[in-house]
Image (cartoon, rainbow, N blue to C red):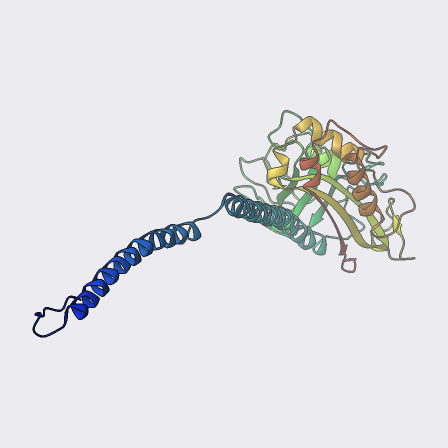
Length: 346
């Protein structure tokens, strides 16, 4: 390509020599240039390959960041699960307490408050059914103008015998559960045929003498009129709000018209927490929650119960009880409600 074909006639000898020398030098230079450029291209490819890969330090940092993100996400999920679980437990207890307290509100609102009929309660004395001090879970029985379980025959009256209790019979299915008695009564002077039935009784006949199961925490009702209304309620306590001075009292006035309201406190445990406690532990726990004292103020008993529960699960508290599992005790909720009574019938 660099060589020029000529003849001696066209160019002189010196000119032919110059052309030949230039062609040789050009060929040598071109071959050296190609040889020099090939290694550079290879090095560039190798360098490019090294720049596209991760170093060991970069991999370690990436893995560390991923592990940290996974841990943070796991903690977030655990926190959300715990909050959801606590919320469900709270709603479970609230639902149980609301159903019970609403039923009590209806029964107390329709209480037959007459001086010629009996009622059994904390602190009642003769000629009424004797209630006494009632250490531990309280009981109450009274007549109320609400429907009940009536005999299969006879003329039904609008009055029922209503009673509330925590069953204390350890062999009963309702042991450590709150029961309600709703015994529908028939009119006086009307028989029930072959069925044995007792009508509304007036003083001096008492509830305790006529229906012993209504004033006992363990006797079964022969008519099977008890129903479990609070399966997760294991503590029941109440006192009286006096109409005369507005104070709370554990002794009712001699005249039923002096009671302005019944103040009831209950302890409820959710279904998941109750699985962690056996009947013996629940009985022990109920026994550690104090009764109403002679001098007490609204909300004070519930505060005392809550402080006791907090102490039971606190290792630094003198009330600490290692035999009771912390998750089970933590699932207990406390409620208090005032049930105001309507004016007496007579």
